[in-house]
Image 1 (cartoon, rainbow, N blue to C red):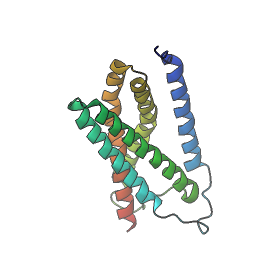
Image 2: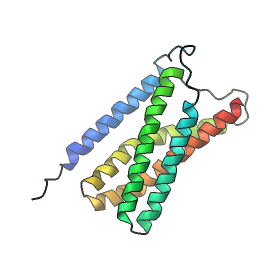
Image 3: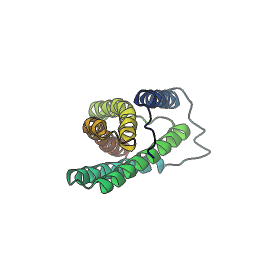
Length: 179
């Protein structure tokens, strides 16, 4: 007895709706919601943890890429789930950090400010695009729609990797500018 496949259109519509809601929530959290009282709770390790989780996600993505090129499907799947877990943990840590501490600003007089802002802008815009792509790519894989998974993964992988790597770079640039 086989399990009936989930209909594609409603699943993708739900993924897009969740992605839009998540993006709107993050926009509200970063740009509208006032940060908690910083004198009460300072979790200064969170930005470094976010960078670590982004780096671990990027590493798992690269390992998954190597595995799929070698046609080691179970290892590829495990690596991609690992990347997903690291990215999900990053998102939780990122939300906590912004809820408690608000937005970080790159110093105004720093000569790297323009490069930082360009990198940050591309990172943020592509992260908004990456979320639904990652979820839909996972949906295709988990529902056995492997040809669709492959087609979308060719785009999802480099965008997800870029977002993960630039997250680390953005953190390093901001930390160096503040040191």
